Length: 126
Length: 126
DNA sequence: ATCGATAATGTTATAATATAACATATGCGC
DNA sequence: GCGCATATGTTATATTATAACATTATCGAT
Ligand SMILES: [Zn+2]
Ligand SMILES: [Zn+2]
Ligand SMILES: [Zn+2]
Ligand SMILES: [Zn+2]
Image (cartoon, rainbow over all chains, first blue to last red):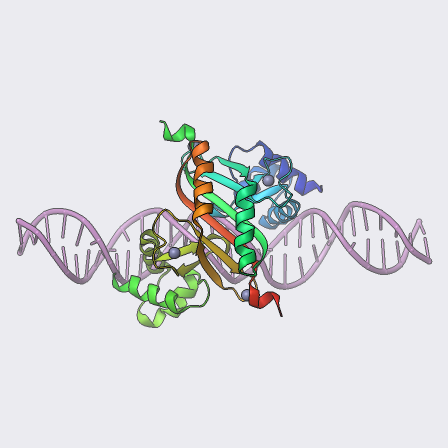
């Protein structure tokens, strides 16, 4: 892992919510990161390897929370609008059904996004 | 449907791919639409009603392709990176499994996003 | 050791997407 | 008409992402 990737990855590991590229930029200014591209480049490499995931619904990034989400499993994110937590899960049967749905239509899937937005257990019971 | 919503909705119905808010703005300038906010406001109302869907993976918008995707069904989009088509499907069993996954964690789901990116049948066979 | 290729980094500028804040107008029930 | 809600218009600005180009580090092959 390169210098910048390490900085970005460690920051994301410590974060308790998805961070935007500009959140990351601001947090790492005193570590030598000065421009958006430095962040986006690190994120691109990390995401390519599965070390971080982009959360489309919030334009943010999180460190992978699973030991090995690299198989054929799709990551499923539950995103709390209140506390902003983004919890990652996998579910083999959903993955399989989704794959089958694509296969039925001869669709060659390269990437799958599953995100559920709502209130987490803690936040709904306030 | 208000004036601006009608303009935006009809444009999306004719489009063969997701349009960005600024695509829409440009296309409707000569119909009186002059500012991004006019488009975003129309899109927000239309999306609220389920007449259009936002495609998170491409920051674009499409008209709903199904007669009634309003039930408890989640829309599943297959997004071709080549021709940019965005085809909408539903699948009750995936919806159910996803709902169960949330319920297990006491997560109160408000909105679900499922998007598959890849190559459509036509484009993969070129 | 040094040449040359590749990957990584840095910097500035700009593109693309989305919202804030405020002003005006339009329609409808009373 | 008046009051209220909804729709619209306008300007400015915030947020997210990439283009284009220059520089530096790394490392194996000669
Ligand atoms: Zn993961
Ligand atoms: Zn929460
Ligand atoms: Zn639909
Ligand atoms: Zn295609």
